[in-house]
Image 1 (cartoon, rainbow, N blue to C red):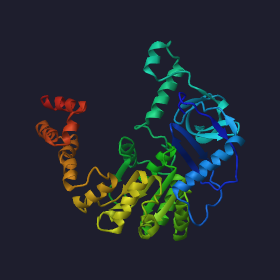
Image 2 (image 1 turned 180 degrees about the horizontal axis):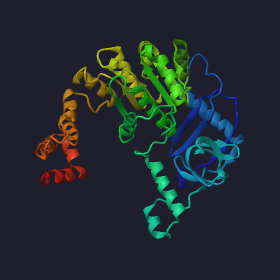
Image 3 (image 1 turned 120 degrees about the horizontal axis):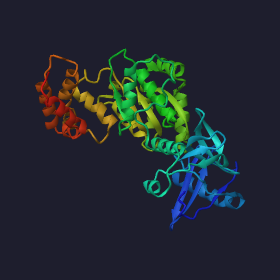
Image 4 (image 1 turned 90 degrees about the horizontal axis):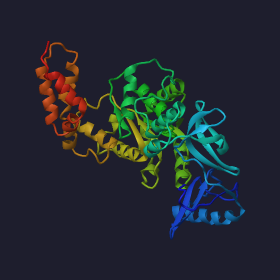
Length: 419
């Protein structure tokens, strides 16, 4: 809440209304009214009301409940803020605020678990990451300086540190972590894992899911795979990663669709559905019925490659449903660049739509891969390596790579006489 805005918060525990979980708000003449329903109540009936009717109903209940409710002070801490948990004197990030009759509670990551603590159990950090305050205030203690650094890392997201390292029951193979680190270092939140058969793409996907789950970024996960792989996915995710999956059978899909039509959106889930069943399920073809996901994993993603098929249209819907998309395929390059373009369109809709767009993104890769492989090959001279650098520099998208300081450093190294 903005401290400059005049707000009043109230709490009531009531079960006399049939309202789905969610946030209902209305803005008029610069004034806003907001009703937060933390638990869904009752059934909305067979005839689901429209979104406008649900909002009108919720705001009517807001007016009814306001005189009966208990006023609570504005929350002291914001979502994402780093605080100190007083009983343990440990630094914790606020993941969610929870209104309570006694004030505000906060869901925090404490002692390797997500817990709800009261507001009086938290205090703000005694320092600020504001550069101006760093200049104006006395120097910080070592502990407070560490808190500031921790806060900055948590707020900005760590791209080179795994929160979940060692949390799975798998043998350590460094290459299986590479997709996780590459995903974390990408702005797109999407990745195609295209290793050969038998190299553990499922394990890499499980490691990535575990990492996002540890960061609180995978509360709603959907796995889509061919029906022949359902049992394998359910068994491996449960046994290796402690991530049990619920299969979306036809009956479960019907129940889920009815909930979504009624405005009852599940806050957390870990579903798995066969590609064949989800592709044929007509209600999810309705653009007004999206399954809002944090993470979607698609195995055997090359089955979505043909733009003229229902499988590709399912891929488009899956891409729209989620922020994070992970696609697994052992054969995208063997199928040709046209099929690779189709998968890239699903991963990055609007960015790579034409074959020419894909070719421009790939035209510097052959020289880059040869250069990388040559670094351990004593038969390749620096003259050849400089020629590959020139090819990268002259490629349309390779120019951005050539602007990096490391590129200039490599040019300097390769310009020196060879021993």
